[in-house]
Image: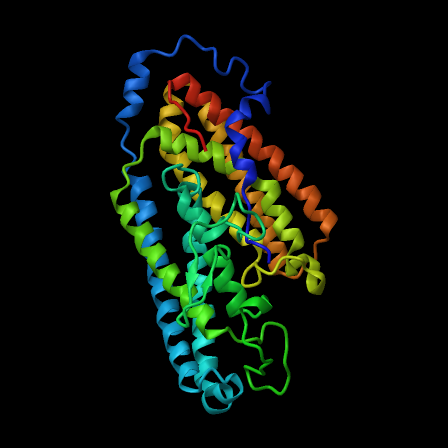
Length: 368
């Protein structure tokens, strides 16, 4: 089983001074930072960052509620047949198709609702456990150290120990790409006389257990978002952790069906291209940077403007790739490697500049 995205590089990015010494000469030894400057940044109003997080957590929760409701209905239909999936499709095929199609639509909305706030959720250490469980964590079988914290208890009493993150489980069950999560029958779900890619139907017990956990976690994330009071340290830390992760995102794109086609190693990223996720993540990072840019400008206006422009350019770079792919351009694995290396280099430069700015302002970056 594969996961949506292991973020091992985040553990090293706070050492970005070593990655971009030319940009951040003197990082860590600037004794001219004043107590007054540090105190001023502690009182910066970052309400907009909190509001952004709450708005996106609310949107995610609404879509997960719909997914969970549909999962319960699907489970009830399957239970009525004694989990005879051939009988289920024969007697309730139209209803099953409608539930799955509506759920796929909800998933496509839920995905950017999360990805656009991922830069905050995954980048702020006290919130990052949600990212592991919702979007990044592996199964305990694949990666014991990077595994999700939860296990799933199916209605029949079977426990699935730390099976992987909730977006991955939901997507690969809904889109029929993970045989471990599907019913043991092949179904022509759309009734066109052909069984095509993605037409498997979820194992009802595993699927409903997944969405029950997803609903619980989305509600908890929303509650913690509403209680979240972001500090400058949170904002600077999030940007330095989350920006220089481009190469791993591009690697996931390379291994997905959008590039590898039927040879794809990645079971996830079938609903939308990974490029869309990258653009969404950078959108959230840019929003956060816009809120701290005045702090940086107070110390070095030219540097603040330069960093903001480079971040905007990186987002535009990814959005251009996303548009070209959507319009039919075919990229190769070699393209993904080259483009990912370019994006990573840009991202490391940006993270280095933000690290330097934090040092100048006396803002302590948190450990990932």
